[in-house]
Figure 1 (tube, rainbow, N blue to C red):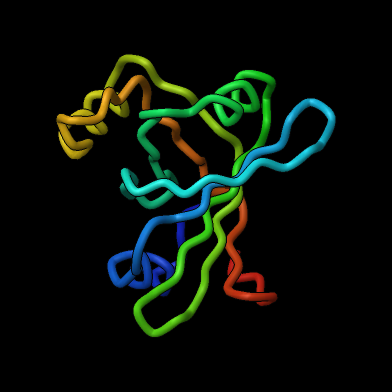
Figure 2: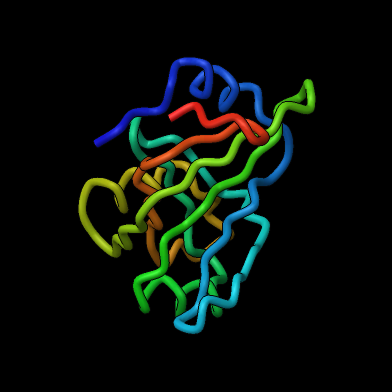
Length: 125
């Protein structure tokens, strides 16, 4: 499994605001949402808490790949693309429960497994 480049790991620690999480439906129609409850699980996995997914969850269940877009405090953008794993139990889910705020339901941990990474038009992985 590809790992995030060190440059992107450092940028992740310097990100600003929510991330944008994108999926597509079975007809290829894109759906993008802001997500504030997100964490880097390890060097090849970004996890988003499913607190209120509706269309996004339907897309995930239909096999959609995912994209996580974030921006740093110095306005550099990064996009992480990969397949999605959906966890309702196990280590990834348990980890999500440790950082997801208690006031949100945390129905599942949505793991985007790194396959490619971009900064603007530049492919980093």
